[in-house]
Image (tube, rainbow, N blue to C red; front, side, top):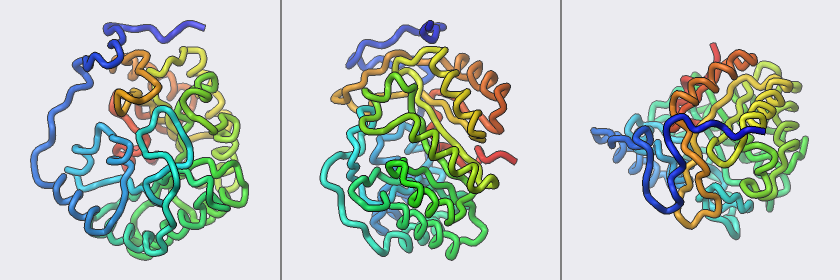
Amino acid sequence: MQPLPVLDEAPAPRGSGRLPAWLKRDLPAGNGNAFTRTLLDDLRLETVCENARCPNRPECWSRRTATFMILGNVCTRPCGFCSVPKGEPLHVEDDEPARLAEAAARLGLKHVVITSVTRDDLPDGGAEHFARCVAAVRERLPAAAVEVLTPDFLGDPAAIDRVIAANPEVFNHNIETVPRLYRVARGRAEYRRSLDLLDRVKRTAPHIVTKAGLMLGVGETTDELFDVLADLRSIRCDVLTLGQYLAPTLKHSIPVARYVPPAEFDDLAAKARLMGFRQVVAGPFVRSSYHADEMVPT
């Protein structure tokens, strides 16, 4: 297997602080960022934008949109790429679905994205809470589309089916990286389990758009990446997102192996579309819920 070729930028030494020019952005103007932050604070809601140190947070919050993160802000999985705190999880808040729906209404969202920490401590992994959040948004915003970005629920068919029954427009589950790097990057996750989840969604409810994302620059090779894309197409995954891995802090155990140039992302996207994905969004700042309302196939 050959590594992905570097077109015009060598990997930055870990901790050097150097970023290629395409990974530097201006902060957005206006008061939308402050409005979103105040609203989320007032309603006591968590977002993956903040907890995962997403580089797109200023832009998205200035547009008065956010990806809601339910079931607390402490994860039960020690994934090496993620900055969400790990440890003893928090109790489930029964009023969270109503608060989430209220925030979506005040933000005027037409596409609501709901994700969560992984809760292996709960009997259903939090599936019932996901379903309650979808139902709350449906009641408050009947015209809004709902996208869920779920953990793997340890592969429990009943838990997966409970979220399917809530009938979100989009069911997203991130593959994150290639199988060889799972032990380093994804802790207790299993590649086949993640594929099986997406497969079950599509077989059970073909009308639901299935979506998966990968981060590049972790150390994957071209062959490995396209093997994953072929696996996703074999289970009729509809939407693919490809983005640059960025270590959230210098303390994270997984360094950036390389920075993928924008032109290479464009080439990968073109090839992925030829494989049959209905929608492909790829670029250095792409994340699975970034401009999610624009990723739904028509």
